[in-house]
Amino acid sequence: MSDLPKDPVLLLSVVNTSLRDFYSDLDEFCKAKDVNRDELVCKLATIGYEYDKEINQFR
Image (cartoon, rainbow, N blue to C red; front, side, top):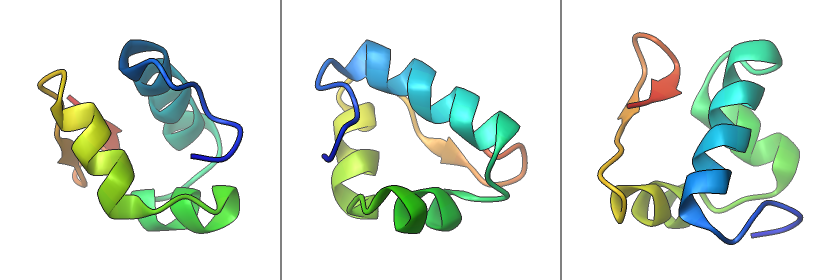
């Protein structure tokens, strides 16, 4: 997953911070970072997090 952390907890922090500060939604983030959306969602699901488009965060 490009230059993103491999550890899911660190990944969660980086993704949520980026979504909050720079991107209007997960698709925009994935396109900008050249990340496969399904892989990212699956990786964060392993620690119990799902994307909530209403708040644009994983929770």
